[in-house]
Structures are given as C-alpha cells and as structure tokens.
Length: 134
Image (cartoon, one colour):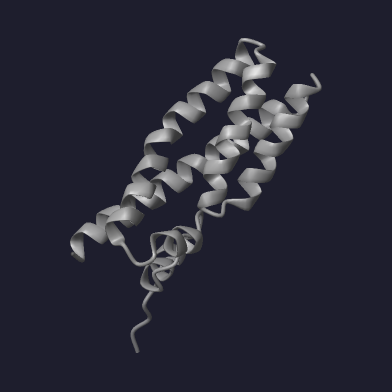
C-alpha cells in the first residue's frame, strides 16, 4: 500500500480555494468577466507595496494623520478581497493613530504586512494559474 503525503496548500489549490483572500465579492462585481476580475486583482497587487511602504513610513515619521488616512484607504481595498481580519487591524490602526495611542500600532502593522504579503503571493499564483488555463 502506498501512502501519499499532500500538503495543505496543495489541497487548497486542488479545491480551487484560497487561504488568505476570498474572491466572492470580486466574482460578484465582475459578473463572470475574467478580464475585469484579473484587472481588479492586478490593481490590488500593485497597491500592496505602496501600502506597506506608506504604513511603515508614516509610523516611523510620527505622521499619525497620514497613517490614519492610509489605514482607512487600505481598509477599503482589503475588504474587496474579504480580508476581514486585516480590515479590523487597519480600522484599529486608524482609530489609534487619530487618538495618538500608538503602543499597539507596530504589532498591528506587522500583522497587516504579513497578511498583505501572503495575499500578494496567493493572488500572484492565482493569476499565473488563470493564465495557464486560458
């Protein structure tokens, strides 16, 4: 008898499910238009490095006003991809920055960055697989 070891990531890919993002909303608004869906994903992927850079820069510079604004802007983008936990962290960064209570902010930024990096990798793989199945 032969035993096959399958990684959890492979199982998710086999089921065509994603771990870090949920494309349900994107699929709904694209109404089956694969080109539009890919365009939305590409926009988000292009935003991620700038979001990460801005969060870190504004926090390091003590620019709480722009940190709060960036967190607010990012929140809208991550929620399109149904990244609820990341959206909650961004909401907390926004509130804490506005009220100058920054003790938890570095921890929250770290979590947001990790989530965005994971989402970027996953969405990049999703797009690459979409190209192969064309």
